[in-house]
Length: 201
Image 1 (cartoon, rainbow, N blue to C red):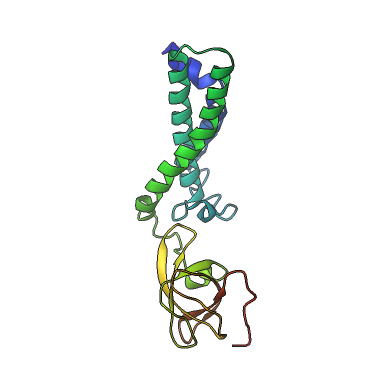
Image 2 (image 1 turned 90 degrees about the vertical axis):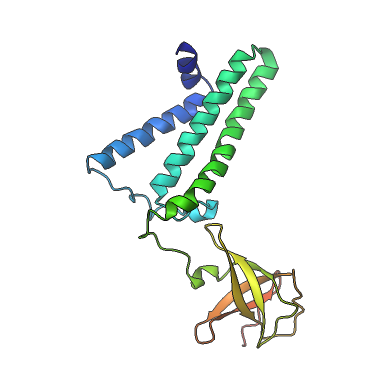
């Protein structure tokens, strides 16, 4: 028990312990009805971290909890290794960096199945793809034909119809930029990534 407490209040775990106490306090407020689980949804975009699909509070809570657990585990293992001096301090910094990275991977894996529990969370719309890069999946793209794969902010991939108004070469596997959506034709206008789109079409 002493080893656990020492790890929880020692560097680097103490940084995550403080954040975890805030998370616990927040969920206690949610339990008594003083706060909503979607309180921060309008302030933070977790989709940029591929953690979209669940409320921000859920994604952040999981991220902090796993980072705390990873840091605590790493700290306890370092103490048991009986290291000292510069190697010990360098490894503690490594634990500080590695813990949130590993926590992000675990949280990202859990977010997708958890998203089914939050049907009110809006999914990606076609307009969300405008401004994103895509990978051409057909041998050519012209004014009448073309398909591309695009990755949404939540990490999911979709195959979409694309068209281009110019004569730029867009072979299979090349990168394009989706710069507009045609509602009537239900396709995206695409241009080679890095070039200026031809808006005349």
